[in-house]
Amino acid sequence: MDLEATRQGPAGRLRTATARAALVASALALTGCDGIQSALDPAGGDALRIYRLALVMTAGGCLIFLLVTGLLLYAIFAAPERRAWLGSRRTVVIGGLAFPIVVLSGLLPYGLIVMRDTDMPRPGALPVEVIGEQYWWRVTYPADQERAAFATANELVVPVGRPVTVSVTAADVIHSFWIPNFGGKIDMIPGRVNRLTFTAERPGIYRGVCAEFCGDQHARMAFDVVALEPDAFADWRDGQAKPAREPDLPDLARGRELFRAGGCGSCHEVRGTEADGAFGPDLTHVGSRRTIGAGQFPNNVGTLAGWIANTQHIKPGVRMPSYGAFTGEDLRALAGYLESLK
Ligand code: CUA
Image (cartoon, rainbow, N blue to C red; front, side):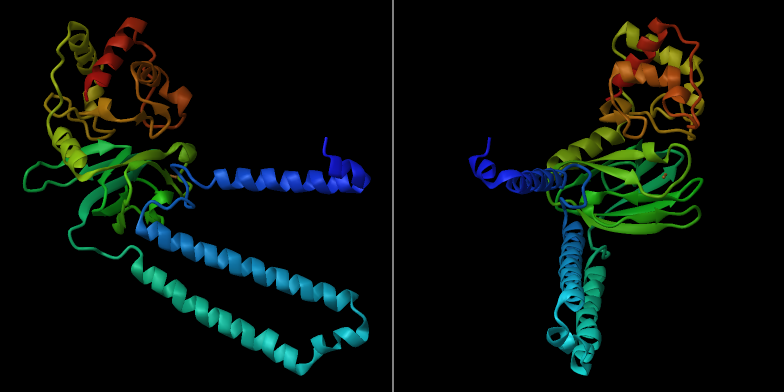
């Protein structure tokens, strides 16, 4: 029990409780600011510029709001002879005309400078193509001197310290590409290519989302962003450019046969095998991804098996039908094969 509050009686207790609640609320609000999907925890220069602009606007807006509220209360409650100056010509000219002109003339160039410096084309940027589909992300890394082009899905792996230029478009409806920790969002429009350049400045795992309503499963259209040190990124890219590994266990070989016999290859590509479908995500190295279902579940044999058997139950409206006819044993073999594609 708070002695001070007890001494103060009910009003004091109420004040103490209110202060505590405010403290807890602000602590909670602050802990919510950092994280893998937060515009308030910038992990790159562009995001930092936008974050600062937001801080200046929010703080400035709050100050002006408090000032105006204070003046309003003063105008209502102060004695007439004390508040008379509020109605003078001088107050109106300074407060109503000069002040907004000065503030807005400062904010406009600041905003324009942030816009100019953010998302600039940068030499030596790594090009990546991302296509928004209902409800997943097709990601393509073009060929470079050492490696062939390859596709992956629902995962954007980037090197730390090197700018990345993402060219985005959409296959069906308008989506929007947004990685809150790295900066602004950009629309993905069918038939048009938009570009966004950002630089990851610290390694880590982040989360990107679709920021434009695109259908039933819009809210379940996310992707992982993995920022790796340059060496680790080069290793990852080498691995992804290779064809799929051969099954080295009988159960995995059975899984691959089920994949073939089940017709999975008519929608999915597994480079190095006869599966060459282009409709769904490329599965050549699906086992190396962190999540499945566009950021919905951790990637393991259990979730893969559940996904194959129940897509329409888990994410109704996706293009992949549920494959409920597989036996449990077949599902395990099939999922085990996919999981082995590292
Ligand atoms: Cu795609 Cu919302």
